[in-house]
Length: 168
Image (cartoon, rainbow, N blue to C red; front, side, top):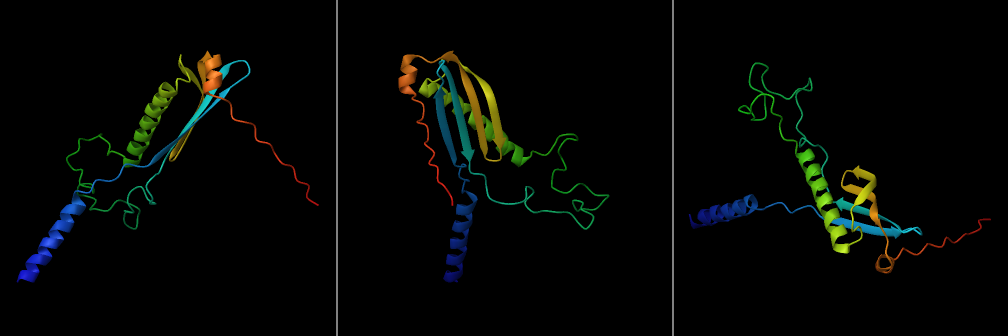
């Protein structure tokens, strides 16, 4: 009988540990590059990547019956357990929530990066923005002109020398 109690105790502890495990926040990485043109125009590129969860289907692999429906009896309540949701209120889309959260994180991080570096003292205008799954990249131009201090603090990257090879 003691063995059964120990097994029940161990299983209970494992279940409690699994139930209280919070998912880790997604890993993000940011890239910030600057360019100061000869006429003093300051441009930058800011990109952020977010490790998206691995997995295929948005709905967790749940599919309906042979007619492609969502299951359940035609005269019964809709499946999914949302029977008491007011009519017209949409089910929250987890994928859109993640994307909105990523966009929010990107915007906050961009503002923080420009503030921390002091690159655009008087704001910026957006030149281009690309948003793909797990990656957002923005190219912008500062409203202020580069000072001598800016040119020292944010040196342009050295041009890459291309080595030409002759193929015979």
